[in-house]
Image (tube, rainbow, N blue to C red; front, side):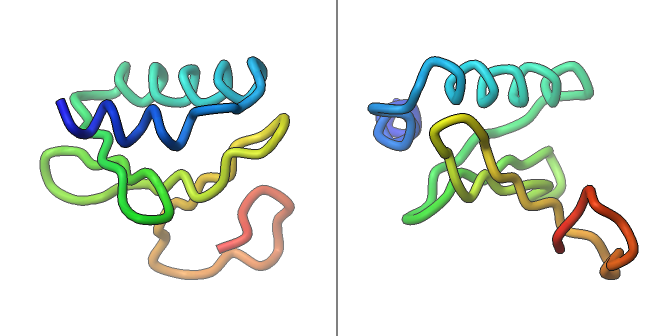
Length: 82
C-alpha cells in the first residue's frame, strides 16, 4: 500500500522512543474506533469515517507533536497550544 511506504518515510531515522510514542498514539486511537492514517506532504493525518480528527505535525527526538482541531482556543491551560 502506498500510504504505508509514505508513512515509513516519515518514521525513517526516528529514535526508538519516538517510534514507540507514535505507535502508542495510533494504537490508543484505534481503541476508540476505526481510523485511517494518511500522509500529506508535511504531516500525517488521522481520520475517522467522517473527518480528519488529528494531525501528527512533528516527530522529534523524544516527542511527537499532534494537532487536534478544536472549535475554540483554550489559552488558559498548559496542555493545548491550538
